[in-house]
Image 1 (cartoon, rainbow, N blue to C red):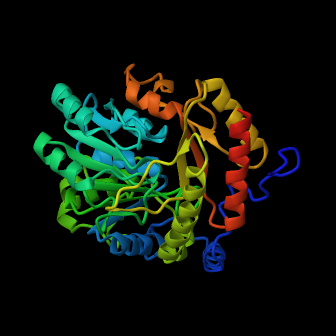
Image 2 (cartoon, helix red, strand yellow):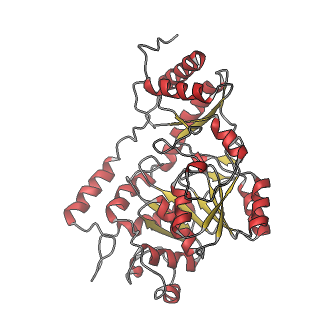
Image 3 (tube, rainbow, N blue to C red):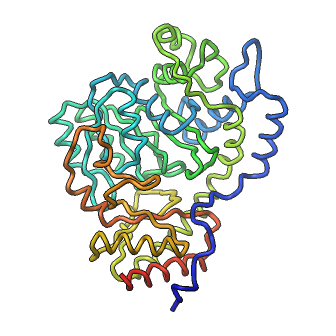
Length: 399
């Protein structure tokens, strides 16, 4: 048995790990040229951003890809380019992070929150009810923390209910549903390259689509000026001609520096995904062996790539859960709890966002009250997984 006064996890669970040497070398070479902006005014510039878009489109199998400055910007531009107008209602699953409702609010639309079940996936019954009751025409589906709903059922419901589907894939880069990448089921897929996502540029985002008008509008909105022909994976000139004089420039571009850091990491995605999933399986088995802890089961069709793990802690009061996660965190097992009354760090719940219209979602609140969340660094070993489980078990017993 571990001694809680002496034993702690030595690895930092928030450590993103170093960038590949190739990424560092390319970044230094680019900085020597000074051509960090993705567009050249009178001629060619360094093509890193255009090449990343081309490579990412090939990776997920989309016609077009647009690099932007954050995942939240990708969602905002996806909404705008899809024709969401101020005052429109946008359905969104209630378990998500603050940039998601923030992007809806930024577009001038109104977020209509949809319940999630205990497995963190959207409630189909509540989705159908709210789509019919509100007349919403858009579903922004967040694959929160990498938990993927039945995407063929989602797509079928969207067709039946007249909903345009936009996917927030910030937590599912490289993940699939029945062999098809997330981000490829709707009109738009939105990805993040923030430090704690699957590939790391500090900040960054990528939007993918097969629709020429959405791609052209996203490029124009992102701030291409009239230099959109420097994109390598972009729609024909006619699409830009339709939109260029009526589309504002929001200056949300991706820089060449961000893109050159990302390109070598994208080539590592398969190996990274395999490593993350091995660690996830090790943690899942150990956590499920602890009385009072339950990791929601994954679905057979779900080909996940997870950089974090979520689990329910049952049988404790809020004060006891708070004490549990605080003590575990004090011993190096940094755990977030989604049941807190106040937002902490990156963790918040829908009822914390007071700029939204108040909405009551008892199933979501009940599920998140018992939900704990922990990052999975790629450097985590089997021994580290043993230590994590032992610390959680000890502190749970103490609680």
